[in-house]
Image 1 (cartoon, helix red, strand yellow):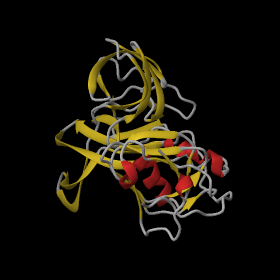
Image 2 (cartoon, rainbow, N blue to C red):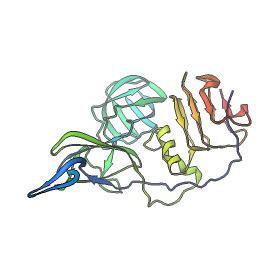
Image 3 (cartoon, rainbow, N blue to C red):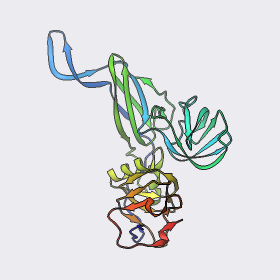
Length: 293
């Protein structure tokens, strides 16, 4: 049975926290000869004026929610699109499909039919569910999709996260997508390790971990993550009261450092047994106190 390499808990250096940042670009694509009267340029790029811009969460919205009848409350993962972009779309809650009748806020929606009473239920939506975007850093709602300028320029402010931007129309014969755009507000002040939980907002656990690893940050485990699917978590994790619970038959692989006290419980293996957590390389010591079963 493998559990965890236990280290002395300490405050670690982390990245900055963020709110929103400007994401921008042009409707342009390589591979097309730029033509000007009397000239034939060798540069292969084409800009499309007034093209259609659609913004999505990379890998689609997913997370955990609690339900009470037709009311759904966000718990973790991707917050709801509070700009009403999800009205009429479907949401799968524990593999049952429901239609969204209204979006009250980024943490509350109403379904068209009752989902009963559930706590920390998994939810997923199609990758085509539009992301919540804004026209400024203070959070003024913006339409999604929207049309670029006459020069093909586009810009928007999303919550911090990772996004896909799809471009179409405006003369574009085959729509194309800029994938995995990381939106990070670099103007926000530094934070302590307990604040690194920010990386969860608007993201799945694996996406948050990948992002934290890419910028050399430690991810604070400060919430309960139930029924986790098989996934790899390459980031360093600082135990801050949270729990990782693999679902039945799932394997969660951790390859970064884990900072925790010896008696700190980090894993709930009650759904999948000791095979639910794999640490690479294997730890030098095994402490049963790290398991919650």
